[in-house]
Amino acid sequence: MNRDNFLSSVDAWFKQGELQEVLAKRIAYKTEGDLPEAPQELWDYLKNEIIPYLTGMGFISTVFDNPLPDAAPILVARLIEDVNLPTLLIYAHGDVVNGQDSRWQEGLNPWVLSVDGERWYGRGSADNKGQHTITFFGLAKALEARSGKLGYNVTVLMEMGEEAGSPGLAEFCENNKELLKADLLIASDGPRINAETPTIFLGSRGLVNFSLLVKARDKAYHSGNWGGVLVNPATRLVHALSSLIDARGRILLDGIKAPAVDSLIKEALKSVTVGNGKGDPEIDLSWGQSELTSAERLFASNTLEILALGSGQSERPVNAIPSQAIAHCQLRFVVGTDWQNLLEYVREHLVASGFDDVVVKVNAHTPATRLDLKNPWVNWVKSSIENTTGKQVTVLPNLAGSLPNDVFADILGLPTIWVPHSYPACNQHAPNEHMLKSVAAEGLQMMAGIFWDLSEKSSTANSSWD
Ligand SMILES: [Zn+2]
Image 1 (cartoon, helix red, strand yellow):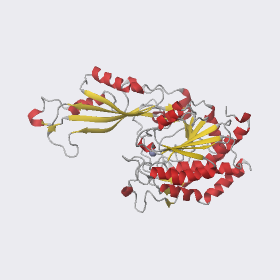
Image 2 (tube, helix red, strand yellow; image 1 turned 90 degrees about the vertical axis):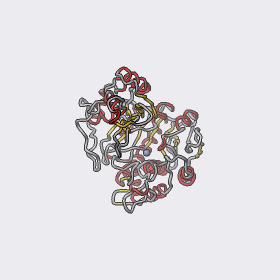
Image 3 (cartoon, helix red, strand yellow; image 1 turned 180 degrees about the horizontal axis):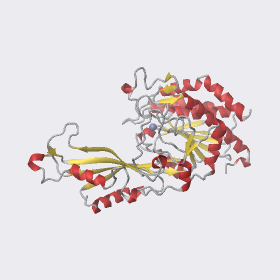
């Protein structure tokens, strides 16, 4: 069988509907990963759904307890053809965000796959069950077509706590480097740049969530009796904020700004358009750094967002000076930002600007990662997908959002290539989440093509991937 025949057979198989049926079974598991307590379904999904499927392909699976107490299990499944062959690591997550059951549009249920034209609705259809179902079938088809011999080993790492911030994943990988030893990571999560364009990304932006609190006193005081002689914490807070970020959303504090966008990244983002899809909001062209394009602002720079502000009773104001004011802020940042020192930068800046009454606290953080655009795997995967689809692939240096990619890039030291099968208006994390049938069909072709091409690569050059 040659590559073209193989891919046509995969497409013919897709049209018979088995992938959709399997996805429907997977969506029926309420694997909500963001609940205070890990539900039994997280284990059931692995035991009843994923392990039997992977076993059918020849994988040997082990479910590990999370190294952190009460956190979700982690599956490692291995298909070892020969220990001397190169190994591909595939990452996926089987948990989903909570169903928000009552908020779905009439006739839809998050736990039942419902088809409406091009759309396959269901919780996890886009994030991440639909995506890993596509990946696993792509691999299964390549295995079948090559009579059970890929010419490389495959390790699947599936966590069940991604939506809770991947607790224990870093520790698990740190403790199991030998078991997870590989040559390349390919994973599918997040959106394409738009529904029509095959996309790869090489890492993700990081984030630091932090809060600023001004607490003036224990209770509120009447503004008529005390206004003018008592400090108002809300006034203090908004001025402190405006010393960090200007009225057009530009970061004012040097220590947390992004490094200049280098020429390779500029080149990669040159033809990338942000937004314009159905259901996308209109881009505010006057927002952010005017010297950058929209794509550079989103993928190659940092943003400081005020996520929530609290003081007084905003729903029902009273005539009083509030006792305190709080701002929950977030820095999204790219590789090269000195984010580890954010707390010191913000504190020192506020003190120097006369805001020593503002208490700064860091609440959560995820590092940023980005595989070098010159890494040979980038062009290799891009060419494979272009051969399969006949379309130009968009290469994003990193996803604008965040993923636990530092675990693979930094702890396991792998080149990381993400091949997403969702699109920006998929309603991920919201009611009416869906997968597009056209993207599923094309995604399956792309994955099958990549797995096929990895076999071809392994059969030449001393079966090494270097
Ligand atoms: Zn998610």
